[in-house]
Image (cartoon, helix red, strand yellow):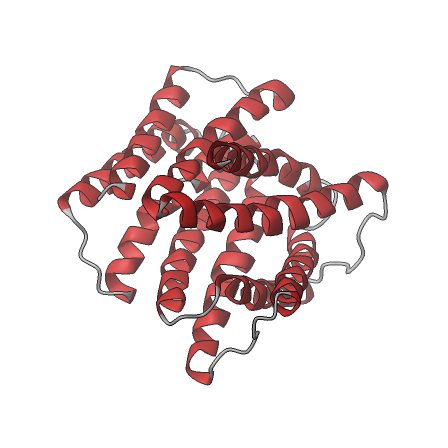
Length: 287
């Protein structure tokens, strides 16, 4: 049962990257994220109500939940969608996996958690891995501007995810139930996405096609609600440290899918950079 949970969590999250890239090419990222998060938020709060759990949040925690929602469910997802418009989804997922590095740094300031020597080494390895993967594109900025934008958006997604994760840890310490936290956070991310769309003048229409609607349903229900619930069940069964290893396997799955369906070529540089990032994640998870 535990092995099945781990495998399903990794496969659903890993496959979400390429589905995201397909959806990002069909509609404005900010609008797709807003609709996705509305479905996620409604689903998680509905789940809480159905299981008899209260969905109210005390006044002192509301601004923190909103902050988590804007960073984790809003900015991070929009940035990741935009990243897949410039770089293969597997590489975007690999960069996103470095969010644990930024979560460790953010936790130092938000939660006053000391960064251990092992975590510091992990952060250094992670940043080194990012440099190995992205440096050639940075130096070739004048040759491939679209790719560079993809890396920048992927980095923004990683930073926002890391900061959002640290805030989520603060909110969980306050005793806010995870489904409620996800529900209200996702709805805040939804509001952020719609606000972004209005500010930049995005048309509030989506392609009403079988493909787009199927992608939206998969990302909102399977790759979000179901997978998060499986992941938190996994945490209950094996503990947060062992469960978090799923996060180091996800980019490997995403890159494998990207090789098969997007023609991603994994050269020595990409393999070395990816291995270095994953090593950094493992060191932080075991800090």
